[in-house]
Length: 112
Length: 113
Image (cartoon, rainbow over the protein chains, first blue to last red):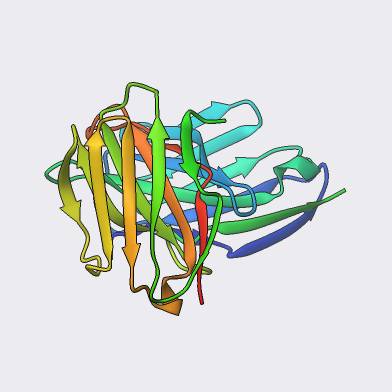
């Protein structure tokens, strides 16, 4: 399988703490993306990091990519209750055309 | 609203019924996708359409039949489904196949009884 796989499966923290989620994938990629899903809703794109980038920031989000280890991490700083959601990484490779492979997600619960 | 609209939001159907899921986007995107999301499983890519042509059928059973009449609309026709087909069905679109990111709809929660 060429899926992105997130770790941990579930994470519970207090508001104000940082949340770190990890993602591993199995094949070479063009880019890796993180998405967020509120319960029972569609996925919302958060951030994209290209294979030649090592770190990227967007607001309270920080993403790192280590292509040698085929892994990525998403850090949410100063978490808020509204950050409670499932977070997915999507590894985008290049075959005949670019395809995404999603993992099962990390379920983040931020307690107020 | 993301720009990708899925209807209905919820659907309960019997195993002998025929129903259709609808997805609509007015983002000017040329590629559209159906994903299936079951509990505690990775999202499964079902079908990929580019400029109304199907470019991928990811070993999906024939009881699921997609239709893309134009680049703004995508349907998933359902017939003689099984209870294990109960899931959240997500539609997504992207500018083209060499995509940078998807825009997802809110999904249709399907329950097969």
